[in-house]
Length: 402
Ligand code: SAH
Image (cartoon, rainbow, N blue to C red; front, top):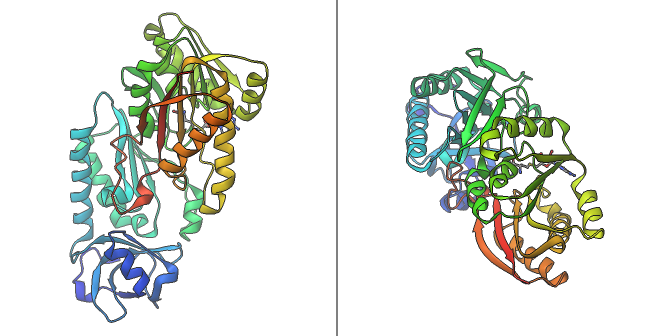
C-alpha cells in the first residue's frame, strides 16, 4: 500500500445498495457479500468505496479474506494514511486522559470505537500490549506509524504484541509469534481503584486483564458484604475489590494458572485485605453452583462473570439457557438483602434480553429482585453509536429484597 496517494489513484470498490445503506446508516463495515467488484485489489489496500453508480462513500481499508471486507476509515479523502493513524492515536490517548481515573491500566485504543479499525492497544502501567487484527494494520508502514506514536506519547518500558493465530488465519496473514516489539520488560504490576495486579506479558487471556470491568469492580464494591462468591474469577478482579468489605471471599475458576495469579494478587494486596485470606477454588462453575445450591449454601454477595456464551447469533438460545442456569442457582443461594453482580460479554445478548433473562430467573426461584445498577463496559472501551458491535459488556447489579 503506498503511504501517501492521490485519492484518484486508489483502487475503487463498488458495493451493493445494501452495503451502501449500511454505511449511510453510520456503520463502518461492509461484508464480503455486499462487494460488487474488487477484482485485483491487493490485500490490505487503502481503497475508495463507491455505490454501484460510482458515487464515493468514503475511504476504507480492504481485506481480501475476512467476511468484513471493508472497514471505513474516513468519509473524506485520505492523502496520508500513516499521518491519519498517528492523529487518531493521539486523539484516543487524549480521550483517555479525560475519562480514565484511578488506574494505570486501561485500553488506549479500541479499534473501530477509536476510528482505528483492526488495532487494539492496552496499557499495563509501563508496558503496552498491542493486537493487530486486519491485513491493513499489519503492513510494516502502519505498524511503524503506530509504534512511533505510542512510543512518543508513553515512553513505555516495552511494547509487546499479542498474536491471535486464528485472526491471522482468517485474514490470510502469515503466522507470527507473540513477543516484544520494543524493549525487554515483560512483567510489571499495575493498579486500578487502589488494587494492585501482576501483569505478565507471556501469560493470561485477552491481553492480560479484563480491563473492561474496571469501573464495574469499583461500582460493585460498595454493595458487597458478608460472605462473597466470585464465580469465573480469573485473576481475582472482582474478588480483590470486594474483599475489604466482606467477611469472607471465595473465587472460582476452571483455570489453574489464572487462580495462581489471583493468589499472587491477593498477596500483593495484603495491606488492603488486612490479613484476610481469599479462598480460590479450581472447578467447573456450573458443577460447583449446582452442588452448592443443592446443598443449601448461602451467600450475601455473588458475582457471575462467565466467558462469552454466544459467539454468534445462532448460539443465542443456548447462551440464554446457560445464563439462566447460572443466575437461577446464584439467586437461590443469596440471603435476603444479598447482592448479585451478573455479567455478560456476549455482544449477541443485548442488555434488554439479559435483563429479561434475569427477571425470568428471579421469577422461577420466587425471589424479588431490585435493579440497583445496569452497567456496561468501562469508558476506555468506548461505544460508538450506530456501530452496535462496539457495545458488548453488560454488568447488572441487583439486590434480593425477599
Ligand atoms: N471476572 C474476571 C473475568 C472472567 S473471564 C475478571 O474480572 O477478571 C471468564 C473466566 O471464566 C476465565 O477466567 C475462564 O478461565 C473461566 N471459565 C471458563 N469456563 C469456565 C467454567 N466452566 N467454570 C469455571 N470457570 C470457567
